[in-house]
Image 1 (cartoon, rainbow, N blue to C red):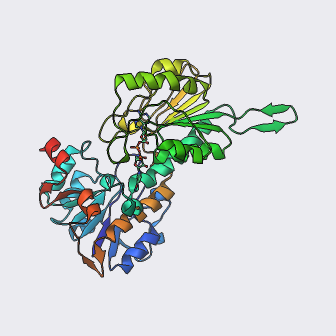
Image 2: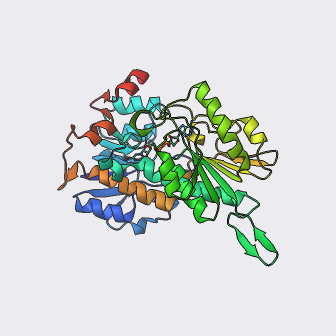
Image 3: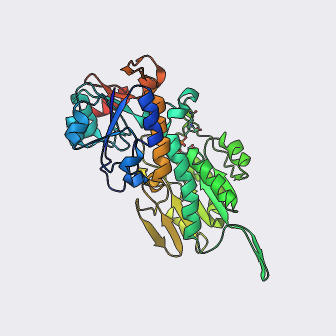
Length: 371
Ligand code: NAD
């Protein structure tokens, strides 16, 4: 089985879909791997770190006879055109953001597994790239918050008196939010968490955080949150505003699949925050959770700093690539063994992750939206 690893072409993308340890494991499954020179450099992996991996001279050579193609970001249209009909692609795609590329994958008869579609079930945890990347982003959000602040996080007793610990509020307690809470707590902050899924109360408390209970239950499908009604939003604001305004750091991570990020912090709420407070908005990809957020930028609004960084996992490319490559390996193991590709199309994980196959867009909702 020939596996090609793409060179990431998008600006600010430092991750790569293959790391040496995973290349060794794929070789044991009967795969030969090739990549372009320098594809791993953003993740501090020079060509010679990849033992046994062939370095292809051009994209044409890389892709012409590849059976399986691995990528982090959606490939370029040129790369897709170079891929063999019937070959298999594993990559993040986000079809609603990439309708043209999705149609091209369909038309080129590529079998594409979209990594963001891996179902959130126990058996697929080791393949869940959204979770592995979100965990890193959550950790980093707490560090970004700490370094933007002109105060320290822990309590400190000095010869001239004690410094009180900083307060950190995390809004949205999914994978990223819980890591942010854990990290802020390790740095010594007093932590508080808030979410619209009541089961997150226990999870926040197990990390030493206080749960801000608004009494709103917006559990939606598959463990995700649903959109809120205006009445629910008002009820939440009545409780949460005080906590936002007492915080030194607010980290927001709230996403609703396939929809713009909900606005959890209004301009008015920001204007009432402590001077010097910092908001780290991890939902910038979906437009942000704060009304002031400018995706990709750090702005000052009066004395408040609002950072809405894009592609935070890429800032931790070494570990992000390592975890992502392992997620890919675990998915590949479902259908590659003894040098052969044998997918079981009835397997729930493969069926749900499949985006295009045999000239068709598979998920009904995506098909309706794009055709
Ligand atoms: P996400 O990135 O989709 O959203 C982050 C959080 O924001 C979620 O907790 C969500 O409830 C919250 N949120 C949405 N709207 C909000 C609002 N208006 N106010 C406050 N919070 C709001 O979440 P995620 O990290 O991808 O995880 C989503 C769910 O999937 C969680 O239930 C998680 O436990 C579950 N999960 C399960 C598995 C598995 O079983 N394999 C793996 C990963 C995640």
